[in-house]
Amino acid sequence: MSAWVYVLRCGDGSLYTGWTNELEKRVKTHQAGKGGKYTRSRLPVRLVGAWRKRSRREAMRGEALFKRQTRSEKLAKLIQWRKRRTSARVRSRAKVI
Image 1 (spheres, rainbow, N blue to C red):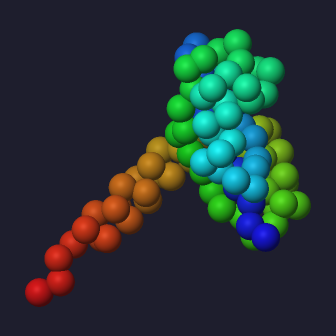
Image 2: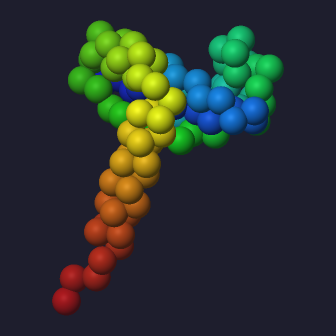
């Protein structure tokens, strides 16, 4: 079963990192103010990064590794994620002639 490592940007500009088996459901829970204690007091939150992992164990390791990085390293990784995501969207919308 796959799992996700995800990053939220909180209303105060801080970053929250977690892992889940159901990404969309977990993000909605955070946005509703029913997620982790940290995010409840820092609404609104929005998803700024997510990486699919092969297992729960791999996701937990990924979360721990991400949390150990400096803020600038985290932001650089999030920029890479966004670029990949954007280029994937462009490729999927390309017309085949």
